[in-house]
Every structure is written in structure tokens, then in C-alpha cells.
Image (cartoon, rainbow, N blue to C red; front, side, top):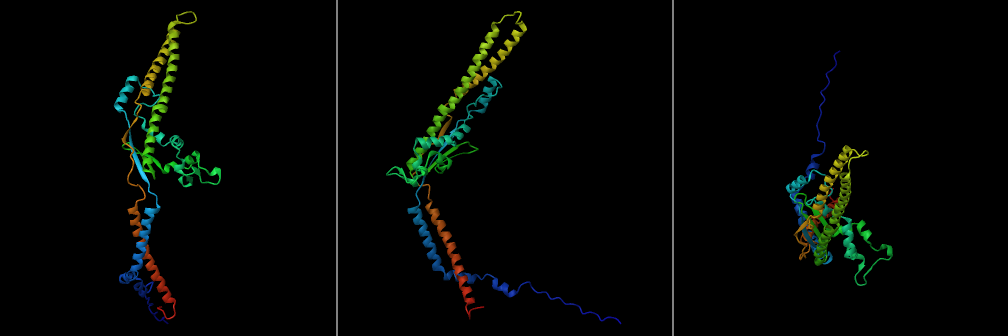
Length: 333
């Protein structure tokens, strides 16, 4: 007997989620506007209150800080002149840097711990760096234990001076920018002048003294080479000293003497370089307008941020009200 044909199975496709839920989840712009309009007074009051509080804090609480700045331009020697000078003297390894290569020396000193230590010690900056624990009337530290008192080493290790003094150099123009930030505008300008003075002292004395020591070393070597050359020039042939040996030693001494003379000329040129290796393009000034706080920016940000938070609070309060209504017997399911 042939089997009866099977009924064709019908598959009904259902959406993965009910369509009614999609419609319920759609954003109703009119409903959102109704919620915002109902909470308009709260949004206005909250935003104005926060903005007013931010304005009062920026005016009466936050201290005003001033910023003085200065710009230095390192003196760079013409490279063609340096090349021609090297060609005249000879292809020798330079014992020390030629003029025009002092930009790195300037930046190294301005960023060094040596400068920071000099500024703190010489101008008594610890009370300025740690003003929160300094009593200007009694001129004493407001700390219980003596070991808690600030010291120069603690200030250097904590890099506290970096909060006041900054230095950076533009890689393209090589201009060096100095800045000092503080609550006293006159003190800010004065400290930048002191920094430039310390830089001048370093270049005029310490950096040049290195060049002088290099020259003196070359002069000592040249004096020994001169005596060696004169010794072989006075020698006459004998059984112990042949003419060939005398000639060979004299030529060797002559070569050393010639090379040292070139090295000495380079050392003298370096020592006699212009002492001022930078120029003050923009001199330090006493600022009249505070650098911080930026009151207008603080008030504007407070207004927009508080307004956004107020809107979120209105929607959050409305969502809590809807949840309570659904949980209340007889409320909307």
C-alpha cells in the first residue's frame, strides 16, 4: 500500500520582539518637551545657582596669579664663517665648541638643578614655594616636627619650583621662552630678571673658565712639544745618534708641534668668543592682568555644565515618578 502524502509543514515567522514594545520605546519628542517644560524652574534655578557659586568662588576664593614672560634668542655664528675658519686652521677635531653652539649650553643651564638650587638659596624662595605652612609675621614654619620643615633638597626632589618657573625652546626658531607665575606681579618680573642675570654669570665666568682651562692644557702640551723639538734641533750626528734618527725624531716633533699650534689657535678663538651668547628679544615685564583664574571661562563652563546636569536630574526624577506609579496598586501597568 502506498503511504498517504504528508501534509506540508507551514512555518510562521514571528518577529523576535513584539512590535508594541518598539512603538512604546520610540522617543516621543513632545513628551520630552513636556518634561523639560515642567521642570523649567528647577533647571533655571539650579543653573543660576551653580553659575553664581562658580563666579563667587573665582572672585573671592581662588587666588589671582600673574604671569611674566621673556624671550631669549641665542647668538648663532654664521656656518659659512665657521667652515672657512676650520678650513684655515685645518681639519682637526675641535677641543671645545666653537661660538654659535651655545644654545644647548643655555638650555642645559636653564633646566639644570644647579640654577634651581641657586635661585632657592640666593633669593630665599622656600617661604614662597611653601607659603601654606609659612607664617610671615613670626617668620617661622607652621609645622610640629622640625624634620617636617621644607629644605632646599626637598624642594629640588619634589620639583616644586617647576610650578612657578618654566622654560622651553622652539625647535624651529630656537627661541627660548621663560615664564614665572605667582601671586605678586612685581615679584614675577623680578625673578625672571634674576634668572637672566644668573645665566649671564654662568656664561661670563663658569662656561668661559672651561674654555680657559682647555687653552691652558693645550699650552702646556705645546710647551713640552716645543722643548722636545728644540732638543732634537740641537742634536748633531754621533756614533749613538745617527743623522737619520735625528731627522726622524725632529720631523715627528715638528708634526706634533704644528698640530698643537692649530689646537691652541682654536682654543684661543673659543676663549675670545663674545661673552654674551644670547640676546633678550622680549624683556621681562610686570603683568597687570591676572593670568589665572580665568573667571569668564569658569562662569561659562559652570553655566553649561550645571544646565546639562539639571536636565539629567529632571529626566531622572521623571523616571523615578513613573516607576513609583507602576509599583503603586491601581497605577499604570
